[in-house]
Length: 253
Length: 94
Image (cartoon, rainbow over all chains, first blue to last red; front, side, top):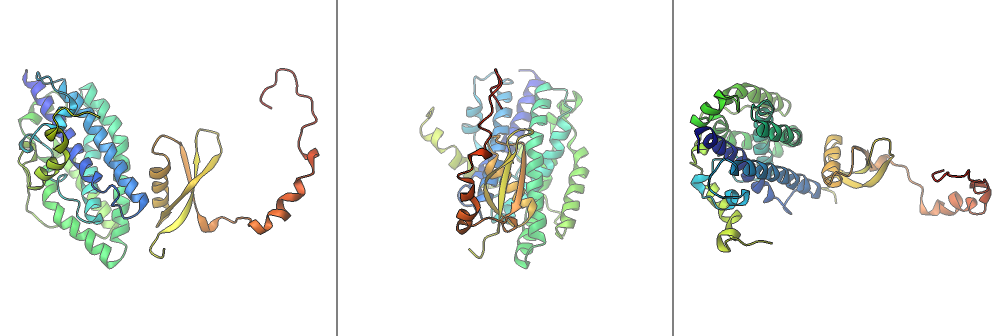
């Protein structure tokens, strides 16, 4: 396998893993949503993300000599082989916490996909362009909830501010890069993530201001996702998500 | 149901030029939420291209008690239906 293919394989897994793990997290809300409408909204977003994950896994399989399918990549890799950012694996917490996590990620995805829509790789360009339409809705949905909760009651304000403070240390992981990025940036397949940090931060600041949420001052950073180093929560998600394929290998329905 | 958001009626336009048809209702705290909830509940399978949401309170409806007064007088006035014209040959959708 040549090094570009290897890098593309790894990069597609990153994009896919982020979407799959956040999609799985949102699916945990199914039948638990605060209202029927919001239950559907969260699971709709979940399905969007799982659909994006599937496309990126499919594309990843074209870069590996191992004869594997998108399902194999989702259900038969272990925790250390997942390269999603640590933000998306964090537990749902309460509704405000879930919405804050979604907002922080969707804002990132919006800028990433916008940039990847100019990728020199046609498939990445196509998938990013298609995904951007969905991500823009996720951004709209979560940012409006942020504004609503921030300007709601004392209790909703407290919960959304707590979520911002608590999740802040995981956001830096989204902008981490390694040799995979170096190689793909050289070929204009992907972008230097530091170029979307400021636009990301500007969006966050703008929405927080309207929502009267204080920008967190936490300088801690918890990183490691792209190296396969995760918080304790990812193992539990995989345990539940992969159970069926692990217990009954090759089971179909 | 004191803790529910207020109710909104949802109208969906299926294709360009078609009328917005009543699809159902949603609960929402404000108009943006109503529009998004309507999108999520009623257009997940590509059922529409435009949505209207209207606060249910803003709809003025006739009542069942009015039914006789409102609609019965039209029952025996067959001449109000254009049934007595000859259809031009070849016209199928008039």
